[in-house]
Length: 274
View 1: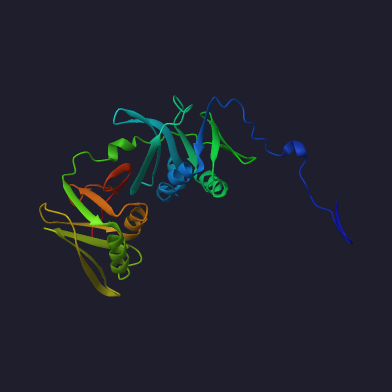
View 2: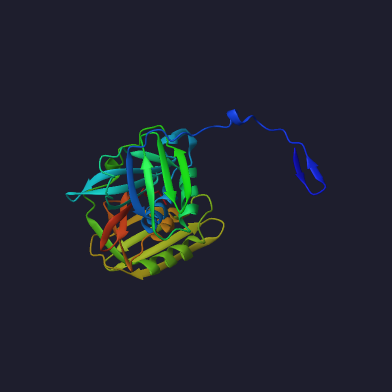
């Protein structure tokens, strides 16, 4: 029975003992992380989380300790098979030896809401099945995805020899303008590289064509490569510096994108036919 003033409600309820209990259990790995660092990890990777339920092991962010340039790092990875985001920061004290865990997409969204209001550190405790975040009196506990994240290192090319350097803001704006003419289904945009120039173009049987040329730093052989413009913009928006670098091999191989002088966050994008 629920009473309020002259109102009376009789509501159907479940017994207390039937309410699902998410017991913390043993969470042996505990470390503190500045909220700003966790925000950065989430914001720069979650756009690449897969929404394809059949590949449930891609429906989250893979958080683990890895080795990079002879240094241990805390690394967050997300991929949907078309693009990959990999972001890393120094390993916090207490995180050494932690298992690699996949934080579900819905949990990532809730964590992002919570840390928006936090300025200091938060505590993360986890096991191989659960994670708990504590900050400012709020506690968020979640189960982790029970699955094996794929060997993402295999899809990150190591020998892309064609290097393009471009002003990031100009590049984003040009992609956005040119892609407005492309088909809604494919959202394809073509990049034509020449000596010191980059031409972006898109065509649509319904709307016509568009092209724009940028001055860039590129001295390799001429080539053409196509991308989904939405995916390309999603990645470009995460690159915080003034200049971006695109490392390519050919029109059929994945391209690496990152801030010119910072490889703590790299992105891999598969090309498409245009």
